[in-house]
Image: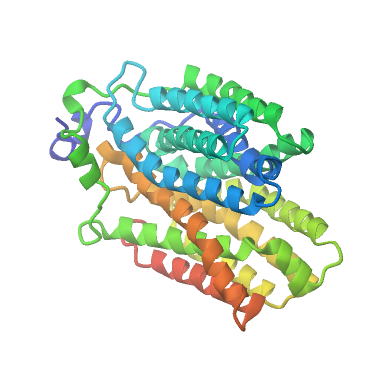
Length: 421
């Protein structure tokens, strides 16, 4: 039974102690490679392969088939991430708390890709993607816990910036990998995703430094206790609640602003080559995220401040979305620049801020899983929110103003956090 809350910090086992030794560049590089492989496996299907596969299975109903697969996969994400986090927090294997779940998750995701590669019916297609999502969320829940487990607070935003870069690189590389296999049913592309993900996982698992949790320190309780732990009282942990709400609102606003970008350029801006325009704006955005993520994190670590960077970047995201409401190509480019700079800083510093308001060291992975749910919720709900605004009398200006207001509310929520500077 865990007694972490009732003993001096010096008496805690290494797995539950607050880290104070800086992690090495090699460790950060191995973690980043692991994340890049995971995001390649996540976004190559989501951006390209699942759509191609749906078109091959049901040419007349590809949108519905794709929508069902991604929606059911999203529900799997909502359940898997915090559940695996809670189980990871209770793992006492000799390989540590996180490594077994990352290895197991990668093998499960690989099995899902094999299933997708042979899926000739809609049912197998949906089932395969669900298995992949459960596997990848198992990996994600354990990988994100490495930050509060091993990275000291004074280094956390810098490492968070590298993590943000890895995410962007993984998304771009995943899209490139999918495109390299051309059109048609993507059998080989699915297998390539599995192979890349597994290869990128090996170096970090071999030298992760994951500390073992002694059996006597394992949190007490079974499934009922784990399920009760999904509720974290805002009254008892107000800083965590405000951080959760802030992340939900900013992700919601950012996602709603991006979901109809192709149609915005085509119908709102009247850009002659909307697909090419999306590529230009995405490239600008991604380049600036990569350029600013580590810089923003390093500045936050040097000054010891988190809230001001999250407020500034959240406000910048809102300004970028407001700019898109003008419906001109110039405004779209300005918006992409602002969004790239702001989101790069936001992703690095907000991750560090969240790790500093977690309620208990014994529940780090579970609590981070609850935070990650905000991204999944935003992904599931924003298409509906965006569709309601776009099809209403306000059209695209209403969508981008509404999205900007959500991001602004998310930035304001951070100011209510008291336990972090």
